[in-house]
Length: 486
Image (cartoon, rainbow, N blue to C red; front, side, top):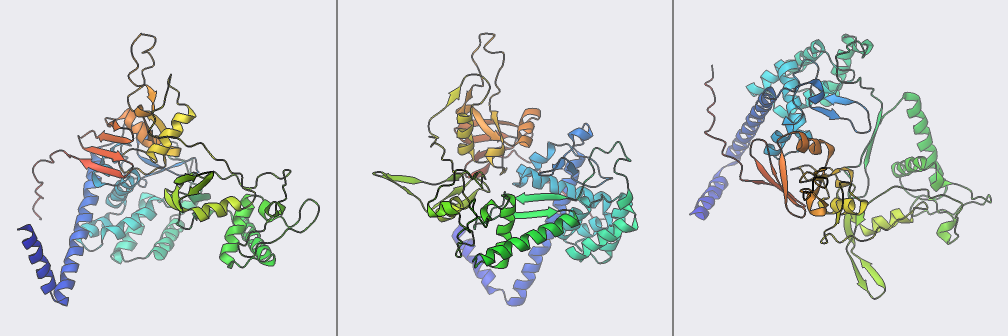
């Protein structure tokens, strides 16, 4: 019967003409936009139910590589309890960071961009476009006041949200100048819980590693420093070309930046005796005498970057054969063996081979402290933070006792309920470690590497190396009947 219904639906779709198909597509898009608008409204109402006890327990964004935090929405919006975002994120199947953005955008639109908010719910502006505007006004530097945000709202609403990213950037810059925000003293308001944001930064997006083994780098630096970096990259690229590199200019500039990080030890033009080094025109990298078999113990290792690569290997007599593809922990990406070989051949790289760890063998230790061998076992087994939908690499996470360690058990002659052993340890990023410790979220390890979580409202999730699966969500109750339109 089901197969007959599916066949009938397919036949009905095939019977539609071009005009009817286009009308159906437009209708589906309208329904999608309406659902996204309702989701924004519900996210804002969820935030209303969870005010923080103080500004120190309010949700915020931690900026990588910086000492300050950014609020999830601009000045004039209500604060939101830090831990409430996790349950919203898991229900939607997204990370806690994405849930923060959703709530922040909803509050920014409702409180600081009310015209755009109204247009979203009227169906004249799609939610994704309004959220793009909110993202800019939330993280503007310096921060937009309520009046400045309303000015941006009026300008954007006048064109029904059709403004593009470049136009929006210019509009925000004009607003900052119009309201003289650049001269505002960031220390003028001692009650402000967020530090002033200096625009300078250098961010390496190492959580998004390209298949080619590259990462994006983004920076905002002083003009003079920028000109110096530009000159250094131009000089490095020209030197590589003079030494025989056949790589394109952009690739040579990228390699020159890496040489700067190593103080150009990979591109020294003369050895200690004053002799010219050989060049490698195919790879674009200058080879030292050690490439020709001459050892140089007087020179330090030029590259000390730590990467964790995992490859399957088989033994055939005295020969070890590695699989052509493996997994790189940094970025959780596929890695080719040839890529790893090229990195290890380059620039007097220091290579350390760690012993193989049998993940099927349980390990334990007395006391509360976690030895390195057990920590490494947990990192390799869990790979990422084990909270539902979180993808932070386990190597940068805390190792948590699933069942809490009782520090008084030994002194009182009781058995230890939460021993330090691999079957009672899990990797949790700092946010979700604090969430587990200070909120009603609970989890258990059903088997090594498989965790079951229960949220404060009874939603259950299983987390293993394949990802997150929702388990028996609670009954949501009767369907909500929307109020009649007036």
